[in-house]
Length: 186
Image (tube, rainbow, N blue to C red; front, side):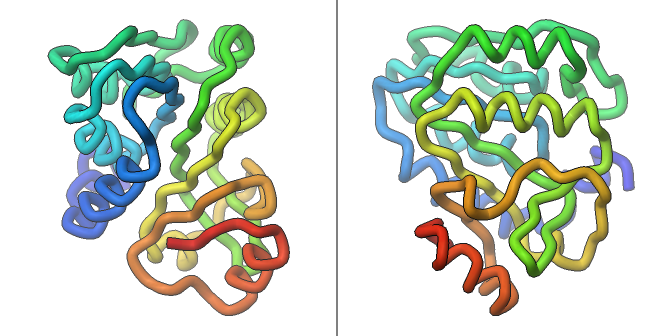
């Protein structure tokens, strides 16, 4: 499915997930937001915050924050994937490595019941891994349909996350893996 088409799927759920994620993020901190239609909903919910430093590889997120009351808005440098406005690849990974953010908010294309967080594009995954590596608190935002999709490239394991915010209870195996790692599912 195309990015615009995915943006329309589960709209109410993604909005609710975005608001829930924004509640975990205080004013006056720094946050990474990566590519994804759900991370865009987090961005919309965060526009009411103040004094954030927002770092993103998603030109759609940058647009959302243009008129917000931020301390700083940072667009990650690199090659733009024209299908969705993601900045991906080695330049983006190196750029992200210059920062250490208080929060990372990432999305994913697929979740496996064993706790794997997955995507399709290894260039996008490299950026998501860099974001996770360079953040103190890690939040995955995803609707429950991602358990029905199979993507081959591993971003991380649920154990590497602090929070998973979704719209319905995940499969039991996923919940057990999260609980064993002290990852909170909301």
